[in-house]
Each structure stands twice: as structure tokens, then as C-alpha cells.
Image (tube, rainbow, N blue to C red; front, side):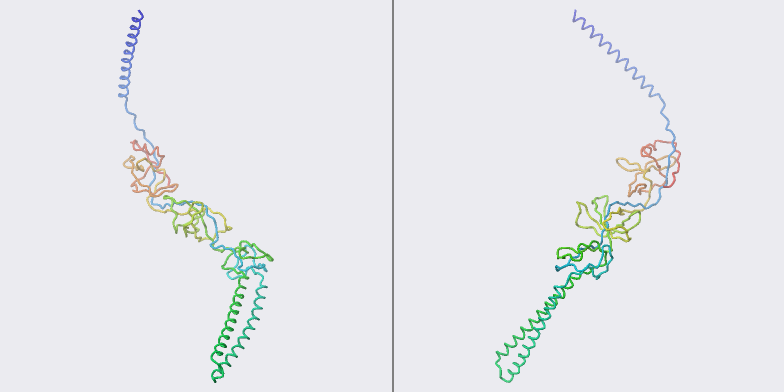
Length: 363
């Protein structure tokens, strides 16, 4: 009995599944027929803004933070130790090449010079006496009253006296030259930056007395080398849209892992040394057929603009040569106006058959 009951239930279930499948297929076929018989929706008409391509020049500028520095900057010290006798300048003072900046006490050297002059005076007297003896020996030798050996001895004695005087005179010249070390002068036109030592301080060779910077300034900035953004010599440099100089030097050494460039200034910058300044480097400039950026449709395989022709829009494949925040120079140049819409709307334009164009104002 149990087995018969299970068989009956199974048969009923199978019959129900078959009936539901037949009914479902019938409903699906009816739905397909209804959809197939429905008329296609008409493509709506739209209004599209258009602009004309124009010949323009576009610039690409790269922004950097630069530092203002002097073309030349040195720390001056003495070659000879001594006490600072007088400082003739103040900080921020403009000086000219050759101006006396600092004087080191000269007492010791002046005393040595005076002593050496007295020594030379005595040595010259000895030389004169020796020369007189040698001249007498020459006359005696001529008449046979002196041996050749004695004459040669007097000659050697005179040469020795001459050498002693010559060495002392050279020492005197060296001492006088050392006086110049104790009078520090400006090696070039510039501005006094910092005074480290003052009157009465001991100046030694390894200790700077003051620092001096030239009045000619330069800008230094760091940058990362990339294929898209190349920094090259002679590129123009701007600040607040005013041309202030050009790239003069690309240094071989790096700073914090970045390349370093120097800007030659052609305009005066009224800022203190070491000030930071925002600059823009003109990396690329090109003229050509320009369109607004919102006329360009980017796809995976290519870039397009939608050109209006014979009452409808068709895509034109283009190459972007250069672009800025507003415009791009493209090639080839469209022969007619192009649509100016969002990329989503640009992609839909070829489907519209009724299009009303609206000329956009020049930007």
C-alpha cells in the first residue's frame, strides 16, 4: 500500500510540472510576440552647443618652489692669527670690490719688519766691506802680489754676503705681503650678510670674520625628472605671469634625491636671501588648431571630436598635441563646428537624427 501511494504522488507531481512548463512556454511566446509587434521608440530631437576650432597658442607650465640665493657667497677669514683691530662695515651694508672690511692688529709684523730692516742694513755693510776686500785682492793678483787661491776665497766670501742680503730682502718682502692678510678687503661688489667677530676678538685662520654675498641673485629649485615634464636649459621662467628669467644651469649633483636647476634672473626680485618663491617653468609651447577640452571624447582605442555635418554629428578621430586647463590643440583640424557637451552626451550624438545646434560663446 505504501509503495502504491508513493507512486501515485510521484505521478501527480510529474503531471503538474509538465502542465506548468507548457503554460509557462505559452506565456513566454505571447510576451515575445507582443514585444516584437511593439513599434520602435523614435529618437528624440536635442539641442547641442557647438564651437568653432580656432588657431591658438597653448603653453604648458610646471610649478616649483624656488629659493633665492646670491650668485656668489663667501665667508672671509684671515690667513694669520691676530686680534681684530677694527671692523669698518655693518651688516646689510653694500660694499664695492677693494673696500677695506676688517683690519687685524699689525703690531707683531710691523715690529718684525723694523727688526729685519736693521738686520739688512748691517748685512749690506758687511757685503760692502767684503766687496772692498775682494776688489783689493783683484788688484794684488794682477801685479802678482796675491795667490789665486786667496782671490777665489774672497770671491766666495762676497757671494755668500750677497746671498745673505738677498735672503733677508726676500723675508722682508714676505712680511710686507703678510700685512695684506691683516687688511681684509671685499673681493667683489656685494652686501655684508653676517659679522661673526668684532673688535678685540681673536681671529684665526679657521674662523670666519664675516660673510659677503654678491648683489647678483639667482633662483635654485629641485625637480623630479619625468618623460612628461622635462626641464631644459634656456626654458623661460615666470612668477605671477611675469617672465623673470630662464634656466641657466642643470646641476650634476642632486638634493634629497631630486635634480637641481638654477634660474638666471632678468628681473629684480625684492626679497631677502633664502626667501622662497613660487615659479612656473615653460616646458612646452605650440600653436595649432585648438578646441575646448569639453569637446573631446576619450575612448579606449582613440580620441574623438563630434563634427556637425549635413544636419547630424559624426565622430572624427584626432590626436591631442598639447593641452592646458581649458583647451587642446588637435590634429587633424575639423572642417566644421564641433559639439561642446559632457562626454556622456558626446557619445550619444551620432544616434540623433534631429539636432538643433546652439553656438557657444568664445572662451
